[in-house]
Length: 577
Image (cartoon, rainbow, N blue to C red; front, side, top):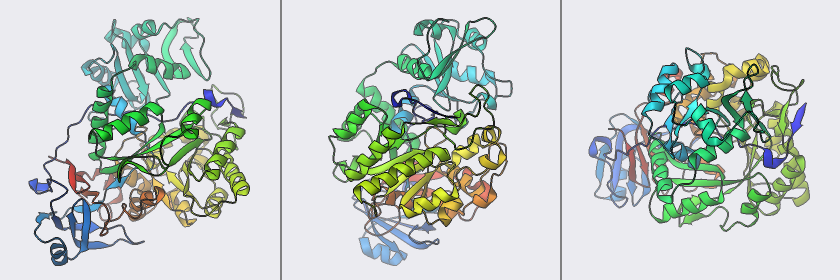
């Protein structure tokens, strides 16, 4: 069965793990990069991939002046376009437009820099329980807690951490570990005590405070509502200065991956205030696309009583921009919350014929209709095919009620298990799609068990979406997976899971198509195609320099390509030492 729950009880599906605060190295390639946006710079002697056409196109040189691309073409004409200029030899490296995030949690990613990264993409990914304990012991306390993020027990050679393991290592200090899903985690006995949990504590729905079936004692494992409540209690409240420090840390980590524009969906009112203040005070340089989420009457108020102009930046042509809002229909398939028309193959711990969690139709239809009626861009969020059916029905109903079609730039994010007939409807209704290749890499092996090989292998059918004529984008849903764009591109091209299985090879795309999903196509999604997404004269000089060309290296080596430099509005935001 497909279960329905009250929207207030539905949990957000962002997943977690980031590393500690990173410092920016702004020296540039051979210390040649522009020191201010007013300097004229000409980049040459590299593979400068403009991303302008439907096939790869290169230019000899790019001229940058006053934070914009002044010219892209021959080196002589580039120099003539700007007059006296610094000349930067790319030394054979590859230059692309800066990467644009189509789906991510900037503020959550920032918050997690307050803890320690236990994820597969940390600097030293833990291989066993001892590695995890060592990382936790080296972590500074926050609000009296040791907090770790991104834990994946299945990747440890000696099995998951138990309550006894944590208590032995931390007999007095409270410890909280969040899994990569951020919806589940565990605490030690000291943490159980601080949180005031007992075997008699009732679990708020949905979720569980796990007990040992033999002894009736708490195991320290928490899921869904109990875990999210525990995380809030552990972090407590902290100052805006601390928030700004987390923003800087997140920006440094994201700039290191080549991002020049990021997204923060499930945006809360306080986060809007903090982001505006951060831009007012010059705390961060990346542009942020904010995305409020409709979850209940309280969160709907931020949309209904919006104190911003939709699709407009907070600070002229930069800062915080809120292009639209999110309406979800279901949640994460790896947690068996995605809604399907057919049951999960493995329903252990769930009712017979479990098909996932589908959100109330009335709520979805109301807020989808509100977006169309008020000319606000809609960002749907659907995972299983039943969840996608609900989004499509709501959109069709909104179009029928308002008569508004055409250039809406409606997006359905994730679309993990979209069917071919649904892709045809996307095309008919002019709906875009944003898919997450890293999800297939991280969870593909698990989903083979949960859904069966046939269904699981068709996750994120990117090639089918492109063949259907959709303008597809790619995302990492950071911090639900590594923010490494090259890893996402690699998985889109190879469709390989962590174990090396290749799922539905017919759904692989070529590297150029994948790169479009992180550059030009995302700019289009945000209605910024005139200013971002390609290396074109007149556009903002948001650029990234790589140490390899994704179009020419072997497909499985794309993930190993590193960012050498990230340039935002003509200024170096990150440079590898």
